[in-house]
Image (cartoon, rainbow, N blue to C red):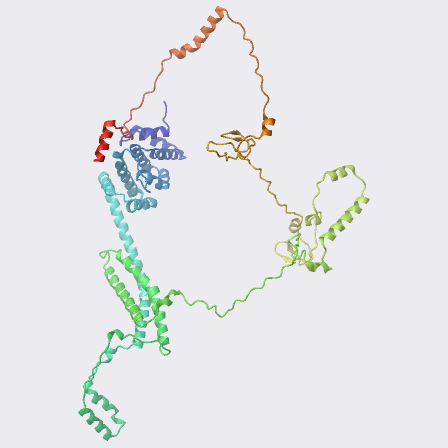
Length: 608
């Protein structure tokens, strides 16, 4: 029995042209996806369904969306694959990102409706576990303007109990979120309220110092001025007091005092009230930059909380509003005093360090030795410096090389001749002399304390004896060889003449896929004459056909004919079985051709 593959099942399910999926084929698809523990079948089914969704037919995409929804509900692995391809899915089934949905036109709107129903169901059932579904839902709703009202009604109609539980769970989550926000605002308000009120009270006291409350100080009766002035009578003589009282009694007048409310808070900053203005600036900065953003945040959070959730919400809202109003009033009074708010651009966290005490001093660069000095080894920092030429403790590597050459030549003269060693020496490679050859074959090297730091992190310590360790000695015996990149071979252009008059610009090593082997050509694209003379192959002589054996007898011809007929008789007489075509119900996406009369009528109608 033939078992259909995943591709065949997906093709049969998506090309039947009906929104009702075949139960048997769908069950077989689920069985194969469930039976594969590795998950490869699920991946194969996902790619096959994405190919079906990419076809330019709305009915095929509708069936593919239904199949995707069936596997989405039952497979976590399939859900992860679909969520990873949400932008492509939105483009194919919703027409997102300014993409057009395929024909037929009568099924385009149905495709968007079916996709909205299935995606709304995914969000309701799996939105809590897959946050990307929530983000995609918001994108479709607020950016692409997809209407989910009909989808929500259809979902509640098909599964009312699940919709009710989902709605109840969402309401509980919302209440829990509001309670957490209320507790957070209460704790923050209780912690910052005292500091904010203290800062506002300090600002109000400073305002009273600069501009006293004139209206409160005018509660006196001008007509009783004589009685008030009598307090100073003790210092004068009794006669003088009687005279003054007599004059005031005879010349009693009314005094009119007019106060402009707009000029009550005008006070010029001077040396005497400078400390008061400094205090106002400090506390105003604290109120505007610290407390006002927090009050605004509290108001926003409390605005999202229902008043019926807790009776303390209303009280907290009123307290926050009062604090916000006091900050606004203090800010207005500071503007009336003429305080410039430009200083608030600085940070509140404290005064920055004053760098004006320090002066910029140019750093002198150390003098570099002139000339091209080649350092043979980076271990010795002073190697190659001209100062070491007259230093008796310094040994030049050139002197060591000459000494080594002299010692080697003298030892060669004393050593008896060995023909095998002589042949090896002749075949041995010759390399230039460097510091690695200077230390080759040594077990220990004494350190020159004038040119090498004794206590070194990597080369060892010469605390007891200035001798390098084994690892440092191995590093001295190594030589750095720099790799030189080989020259790239120039790839010649084809330069074959094209139809438009240009030359072929392709560059291939041996053969151009359009004009054959790469051969030398001139500026006009013609073959060079020397190449024609050298590369033209000699003409090949046609070989004479070999004489066929003569079999002209009648018996031989009849026997050959019988053998041929026996070979082809089965093929000729075999009945041809044509495969049965499966009936399709897909609507045609081609526009019907109009006859000449209809086209003429449409043209005449447009002209009218």
